Length: 312
Image (cartoon, rainbow, N blue to C red; front, side, top):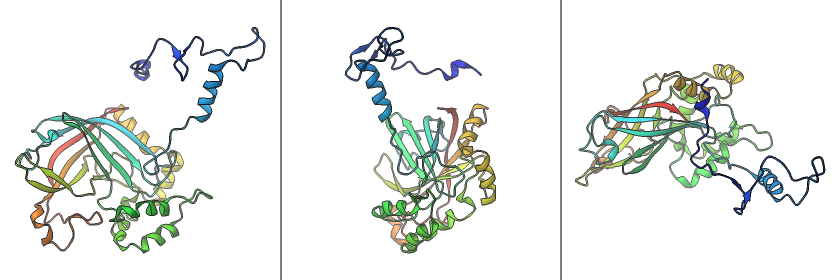
């Protein structure tokens, strides 16, 4: 093991410690005592402040997507789509843009198993010359609800019972039964893809319908799809029990270890496009997140690739 690999950054190092109010601290390793073996003094302000900070330090957990893993890499444009967009990331074939990707589970807490039947988050941050662009999505192409006002209620239905810390499917299905638009998403969640084998072998979707804008000001509706070069694999329930019993952080470890070994995961970015002028011609609402666009009418177009080659 290379010890320098895990050396902390010195970006924010200072020459001395300070209290919360900025006063310098001469000794951060020893409490103030009466003599070399005497009792600790309550007048040791730094000691009391340090312990008080420790007792109260909390990193607030995300309400959803609390459990996750991050890796960095690059996105490379492989097809000229300047007729569709003037976005910097797509400015030319071969252009590479740094990215950071966070994969996550959705419902459960930060230290929950990664083998639970649950949607997975697939969030990509592009560090472009024009600024950061976040393409946030899931591993399933649709969602449970159309109207965001229902989102807190939906999450409450999926969250574990605070008394037992167990998810109760009767509560999930009771909520969804009142929202028939959730049926499409439910077929994905309860299908084989409901438990991805790991983060490297799952698809990603923007879910929403986005707009591309070209230099002439012409708009195009677009759907984003991330297709893993490693193939798409999932776990059945009995497989998930075995994998989770051995390592409840298996997906995070799989991602980190493969990148460390040089097995860099790669995804192909494909898009579906639609002329906004035609959106009312179809028997579905193209802006509805509970619907997909049929690929026979809106074929996938490969526009780029993403490679993750650095752990953080």
